[in-house]
Image (cartoon, rainbow, N blue to C red; front, side, top):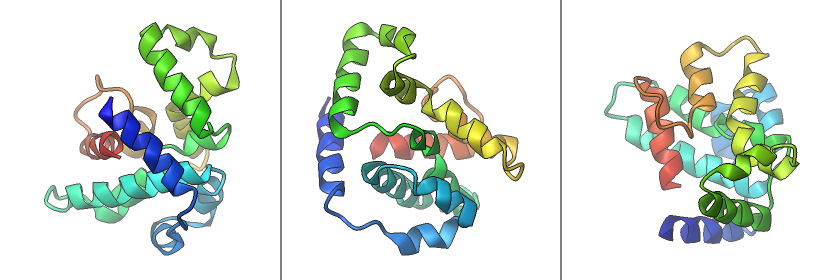
Length: 164
């Protein structure tokens, strides 16, 4: 629960902070930046925090840090279709906890759909570019699914996402 309180304050703080465009430009190409810029500011800030943390975690694991940074920056790209505001996200987090996930059946509501399905939507969006391999797409697709294991990139992004 403390994590959720911290996340709420990060979201509020992100509204007044500038986006680290130099960091984003270092890792994303034009098409990726176009997608990234569809995210709400708080989601962009979150992805940048996740990316920086993931790069630090990956340094001694033998992974390509540029690839790690790129995957982390794009892991929530599916939220670009319908980004939740702070209030919507807070309400959905609470309702998800109280309903033990039963809220998911109301995915015809855009906010609910975005909350539960952004990972799948993001992977499908990136797949259309035909430049990402299965490991990369699976990282985006399964970053909220703890049952998927054996993908080092996914495990680092998932850990960083949970910490940020």
